[in-house]
Length: 274
Image (cartoon, rainbow, N blue to C red):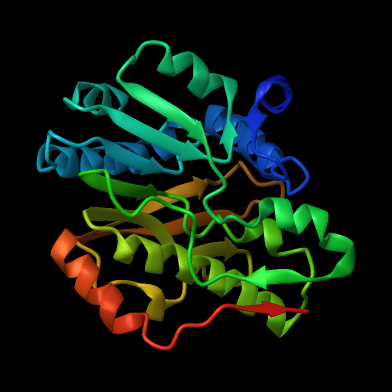
């Protein structure tokens, strides 16, 4: 509880992030990591390995863009720092743990950024039950050699899961946020590395429940690598439930990203849900 309280109290965040529960979520992850370091280690190592491999192939003349820096647990910070033009991290929350780490890496910059562009609108318009349905995300389309979306795609719509609209409209909103993120990645003029879970397997006394965390049609082809993340090992949950996330890695070369974007953005429109 001390780690959670410390993280919650000293995190910086974009407008709307605290109201939407993002700071609380980061604090919960900090506490959960402390309790489950051994179980999480293989996932963190494989994430860092995938990022390291992509950075080695990146153009040294332009920086690396990281989307979803979190606590920095799954980032190879030394490799990012060693990239000749450095790296820029985007996240809606900057926890004190990450802030302390970054002091050791002068070639890594951090910017508070709402990658959905909807948090402020969510908090200001909650009572009116009107939130825009996005078709794109506020991310840079040039100026980098590589963009990496790190273990965040399944998480970015969760702030909107208990807010208006409800029912089918809520599902459309959450799917639209994920689709907007992927569509914007595809529109970037440089290589993309997308790392995300796509299924949640919950093992209970009466069997297993499989929950899709990112719908299959959204994925840009087949993953180049996959693994299991034992996010809730036996003993962590009060009810004895074990939870495993199925994680995949997708790599989109710059030329393919632009071609995919041209073929999938035809006919897209902006709209809203009431």
